[in-house]
Image 1 (tube, rainbow, N blue to C red):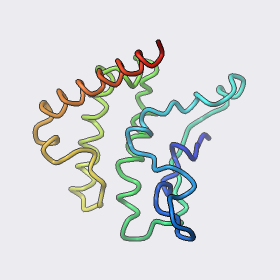
Image 2 (cartoon, one colour; image 1 turned 180 degrees about the vertical axis):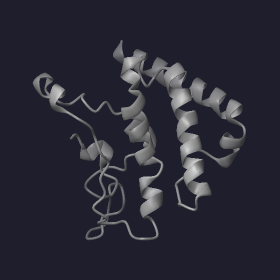
Image 3 (spheres, rainbow, N blue to C red; image 1 turned 45 degrees about the vertical axis):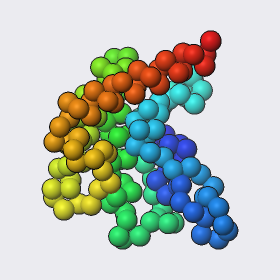
Length: 154
């Protein structure tokens, strides 16, 4: 089981409760969780032994009032990543991979909210009601980010 604290530990990113300043680990946004390749940091000889991945929360800084919004949509992003594995069809940078995944995650997150499970929104409500506008913007941002990555590599 793979569970990297940088990507999958959901307690991270809040203010340190004992000292002023940030916690010891960064906040993992749902976009980072979806983009994280479960196998990337593992040695080649270990990769065939991985049977899954998990998000974790030891509730160090999460209480009853915030647990669901900390879990969702971030755990949905990991489920989408593991279920569809964008590495098999391209990369998560590909608009053709990213947008269908985003649409599925929007509806799962909205379904949880409709069942009175508090969630943190993936995007504004406008995007759920008008995905074509948000998808066009998202596609343009993904393309811009890809161009920035290519320029940095040169």
